[in-house]
Image (cartoon, rainbow, N blue to C red; front, side, top):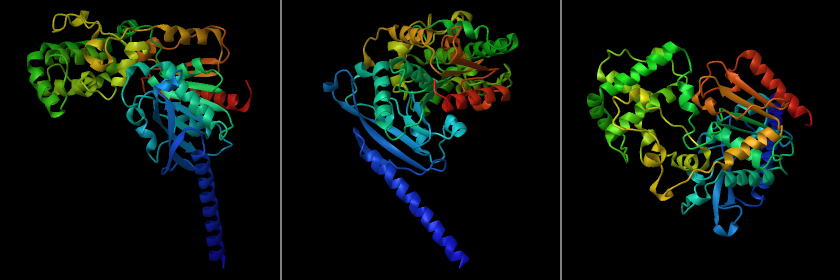
Length: 429
């Protein structure tokens, strides 16, 4: 009798869950501009769906046509706050049943992951680079948020990592009232195509001993160029990579990129091989930190390079310490020379976006938490800090890299950030 009662209760609960799932799915399919809803497995949320939104390719000129944008919705409850992840790239990772956003884990929220336009399954056809603008990406997010808000009526938090964090700032600037809170992680705000502040940062980051060891390795790799090149050519052939520049220049750029990538990902100098190591050891370490795929044709991040050249900005390389060994005379203009698709044509950098974001943060005081890593070269171009702001908070993880998150902050700092978020969610601004 007891076992039968338990079975009935479990069946009833399963029926309730199935009914709830069908309610959400039905609501999603009835939303305007939603073309497809597909349920996914999830171990961290009550329900999970891939939703396809029809978006204007140019929001100010809808006659230009439309494209389909992929959105992943992770559902906790209609009464819960909602995090919108303003992804800067593709969103394949969000399809995993085990996916869980950090803020959602800390705060028990729904999560809406928006794949950025011109990446993976959110790429328009035909491909016209003119419509890949920060403003259009902000309008994409605005369309999705306003469409979903009748379902999720609680507070909204925008968040993203790296370029996604940059997209958080863009979205908040163009549509300041769409969300209540914004949490950009390791988000750059560059002033120009080759900003210039990164190179200065790399000359001062870490300890003198660490910088000396890194430079010594770079120099040694270049000194062995005649032996490194056959290894690089074989490596690129095996990976089926092609380049617009000679292989000797590819090696130069790998070495120049090494120090940036080294600090960006928080590598320890203990991993740097002895300078007396054989060629294969030196080569393998260089490939592990700064491989040539970054400079190859048909890169999966080519859409980012277009955006960087157009209005997001990027970084340059300091060639002076290695000029004796380099094949190239200068790295100036390298982004356009070797990384932009020919279909993009000549792109002139427009600094309007930088000033728009800068002025928004200066003239307003939105509830925003900026997370940065102390040794991450991208922190050289962190968002501006203005005195007298009550709601704009900045946190730098000591010795933190581009992997800096709230969860790996010092305990006291982590607790402070969580308390701040919970207080904002509990109170009106």
